[in-house]
Image (cartoon, rainbow, N blue to C red; front, side, top):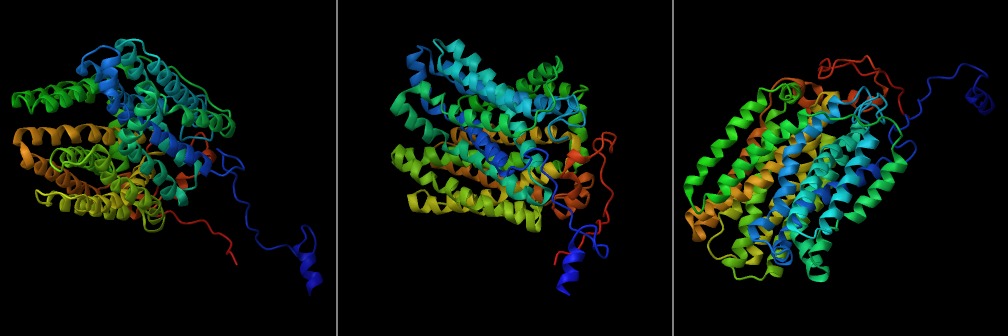
Length: 530
C-alpha cells in the first residue's frame, strides 16, 4: 500500500529499511566544489610553464640588441630556464615526497601530516614563478636576466611536479584518464604555440611583455588555490642534498646538449657527450638516487619513461626540421610556416579529450599505444615526403601525427601516476616531466646534428627519419610490460586502481610506501542501483 510504503521509507518507523545507498564522499580537496576547477588550473599552469620554455626564443635577437650582448649570451635567457627546470625536477619530486607525512602532496587532502602540504607548495611555486618572471622583465642588464630566468626555472620545476599530483588528488580514480589528459595535452601545446605567442607580443609590446605573458594565468591560479584547497600542511626546508643532485643532473644534461649543438661544425665535439657519464654515475651511487630507483622498480613501468622521452624527442625534432625546411627549402614566410605547422597542435587539442575518455574505458596503456602508433605513422609519412614540399602535403601529415599525440598524452601520464607507489607520486611526476623535458631538449639537437653533418635536403630527411624512429621506439616501449606494481591489477588492465583514489581516508599507519596491492582484491558489495 502506498501508505505503508511511505511509512517504511520514513527513518525509524515501520519495517527496517533495506540497505541505503551511501552518500557520495565529499572531495577532500575541493569540498562541495567541482574538482574540474583544479584540473583546469593544472592545465593552464602546465600550458604556461611549457610556453615559457619556448616563448623567449623569438625575442633573443631583440634582447641581444637592447641589452648590448652577443647572441650567444642572450641564449641564456632560454638556457638558464631550461637547465634549471631539468636539473631541479628530481630534487623537487623527492622534496615533496620525502618532506611529507601521511598528508603531503598526493597524501591526505591538504597535507595535514606535518610535512609538505599541497596548498602551500602550490602557492610557493606559483608565487615564485610569477615574481621571477617580473624580475626578468625588469632586467637592466644580461646577468640580471639570466639569474632571474634560472630562479624562475627552479619554481617551474616545482610546478611541473605538482601538476599531475594535483590532478590525481582532485578527481576519483574512474575519471583520472580524462583529468590527466588536460595538463598532458595543454603542456605540449604550450611548447608548440610559444614562438607564435612570443612573436605577437614582441611586435606589439616588446621583449619585456614576452616575459610577462604568464602573469594573468598565475594570478588566477593563486586565487583559486588559496580559496579552494584546505589549509593543511606546511613547508619543510629541502636541505643541501637537492643542490648537489641538481648540479650533477644539470652538468650531465649540459654536456649532452653542448656536444650535440657544437657537433655540426666540428664532429669531434660529440665526444663531449661522454662527459655526461661521470656525473650520472656519481648521482646513481648517492643515497638521493635510491628513492628514484625504487619508484621505477616498484611501479613496473620503467619503459614508459623511455617512451615519453622518445616521443618527445621525435616531436621536437620534427617541429625543428619542418619549420626550417618550409622556410629555407619551401620559400614560405614565417606566417605561412606557422599556419602550416598549426595543423599539429589543432589535431592534438581535438583528440586529447577523446584520449582521456578512452583511457577511462579501455585503460591507459592500450590507448597510449594506439596514439603512439598513429603518431609514428604520421611522422613516417612525413619522412617519406619527397624533396618538393607543399603546405597541403605537410599539413595533413602533421594533423595525423598530432591526432595520435592527443590520444597518447593523457593516458601515458595516467599510466605512470596510477602505477606509482601512493607516497611517491611526486617522484613519479618528476620522472615523467624530466623524460619529456629531456626529449624536448635533445630532439632539436639530434636533428640539427644530423642536418648539419649531412647538409641540404638529405639532412632534413635524416632529421625526419630520426623523428620517425623515435616514435616507433616509443610504441615498442609502451607495448612492453614487466612485473612490479605495474603488473598489479590496475597496471595490467591499464585502469586506475580504485584503492588509490581517496588517499585521504588512508590511516596514518597504512601500508608501507611502495607496497604493491594484493592482486585481484575482492570488490566490496554495493547495493544495486535500480
